[in-house]
Image (cartoon, rainbow, N blue to C red):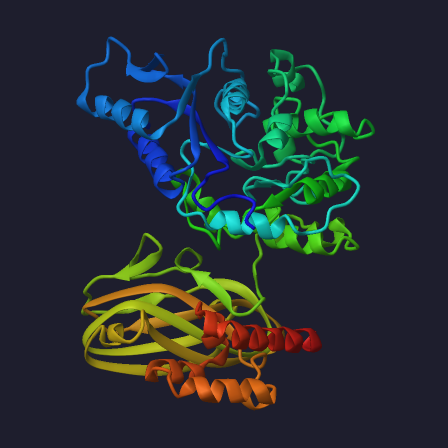
Length: 534
């Protein structure tokens, strides 16, 4: 039986934050979407401040000075989709946390959370910023799965609370800030989330701590940007957990005496959302989710999962990284996905999540990058084109090291009167380039795609495959081969072609119930091969 109902019967959703003329429409759309996704949930709108809204008889109304049809619609829609409204009073802004920030609205945040949680009545709660949308209910599946990971001596909550990897900071990386757990959203038992937010308002003295105190010896440049005693995330978490564990220490933001304990508390009481497995809408920070260094600057879902399932691993060994290796990327964990933001173009432009090349008669370099390091081995680079229209095009694809100085392989592809001919059978035109890296560590690896002319072209992404690690069908167990032999009799031709061309991708992608057995067996055999080779 599921902990949280798919339609939200036992879930309160608290949307908290300011509602102003500039964001009212977006916030209203987000509230409406949550109502569609969770029709039986209790939705609470906790407004920290507003320049045009008020509450009258438990409904939203416009301030008397506002006369605008759009804002009339905002009120009408919110009154239809929201169950309860809360307005925060007696709160003021504070000075900034550090020299790069604006004034701090932490007390608005604390008060909005408290007020909203006090109105919630369901067993579970999602307390979330009002500009953050989970686009479906798949994040609940993640939450339930992660709640099954083992817990140890720092467990306090009845169930784990799910949080975001951004910005659950890694205290072994650039900014060494223990107990810095992301506060964008909290999903968990209502009683647990209420405990976490049971903290007093932050004082002016706290926010101006470094105007009269020195930084700790050895503080780095980023850590010396601070004005407040700690970050707000640290204040909330440490205020609660220090009551439960009096021996915890955090005298200031980069006091690292208990950073190992801060990781243990994270593993026992929280779980980290995997944004790659559940769709979200959060335009203010979407680029931060795609910025690869954040996987090291923050505690990623993958690192949380490794540490949570293997409590004998020393967090320091897994998480320690300096400025050089935070911003240096390595191609590993195949197939390795390179999204459009990892790549560059000279004749196109980035539009959304793709690189788009409009009509060109003179051609040029449509794609190059990512300038990551690559270990010695045999690989395939697969370029996915979501659109390709050409009267007559010569396409050169090459793989190189050291920013083009060493060519690993180059192939030419010719197209004539081609107009998205792939679209009836599959989603992409796939261009494969096989190559071998002879160096122990190949520096600044890139894939380059050059064309002489094209009518229209869109590059979605690139995947790098380790061609050695995929077992052949002949290596698989007898029953598996028998099962697949029978299945192939009813398979479509394009699926059989996909199976023969790339078994790994064939077994990785299917979602059919009938595919569960072969998918599990094949992918587990891939993992065994990877472990043996290591």
